[in-house]
Amino acid sequence: MRVVCEEVFGPVVTVQRYKDLPPLFEQISAAQYGLHCGIFTKSIQVAFDAIRALRVGGVIVNGTSTWRTDQLAYGGIKSSGIGREGPRYAMRDMTEERLVLFNL
Image 1: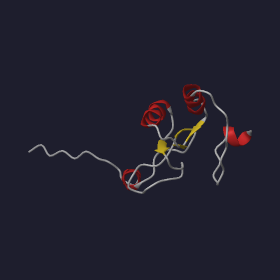
Image 2: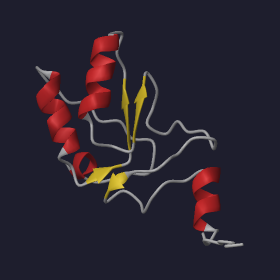
Image 3: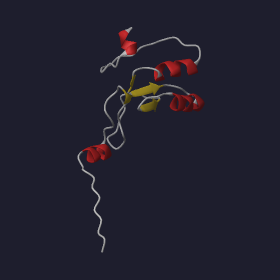
Image 4: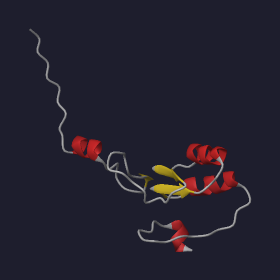
């Protein structure tokens, strides 16, 4: 289905069967997009496996992929967006860095 292959900006949930997590993580990481991913688990090992394996801008353990706070970087990789959002990144985008050197 297109909803599995494309970015959807709305309240959508897909349910798919799987036998092993590593091939599922590979499939997610191979996607064209990589904004955020939510994973629900009671296993800290599964959570860390997901964090290490998933090529996305953020992994939210036991929460939805829409969770965000302005103090932290938010954004995706690959074809998802053009960088990060948040105060630090906004300041960098609105600032022109220059070198000033006094040789006295």
